[in-house]
Length: 217
Image 1: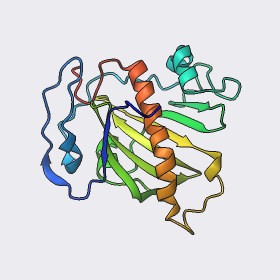
Image 2 (image 1 turned 180 degrees about the vertical axis):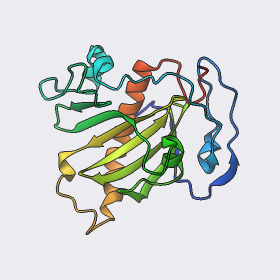
Image 3 (image 1 turned 90 degrees about the vertical axis):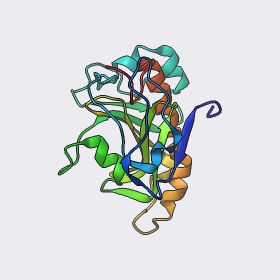
Image 4 (image 1 turned 90 degrees about the horizontal axis):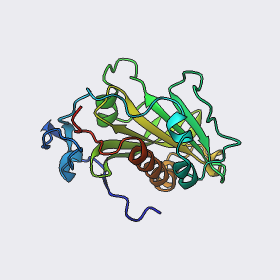
């Protein structure tokens, strides 16, 4: 099902300090240049409303999306509002867990997106830190994280104040020890990050039609 998903992904090995080239904000959002991933500074804005509501309401109301994500409704938290937690926790029929959230700034990093774009967060593994463009229109990063549960997390800049975030976890890696064997992060990233990206793209397509990092407010 990954065929046909438009994305550009690469490790940012030689970042540029100048601002990435980019088209003017427009509606629908314009396509982003593929070489944007090489730049530390992006021509972003944060004046659009957050497309994600911060709970499961948008996903629960979309049966086609629930079916495509293979959500198990009996094990997922689809009730709204969901404890005002700014996330939506889903469990697939295969037992994998998906956590969709609005990411908060890290301590000492008032801009949650800029800190995500330029460096792996604490608890993340730089061996699988990637900058991406998803759906051709959104800046994003994907990382393997080991904070409580091992997952691949993808953070997406939607032109909004908060960062749209998807974490994908699998029971297959529940007993992995990345401290003892950090090389496992590469294997986990190769298997879970495409799943996290697929979820992010499917959800954004459903809840943010015409959206993107440079969508006009």
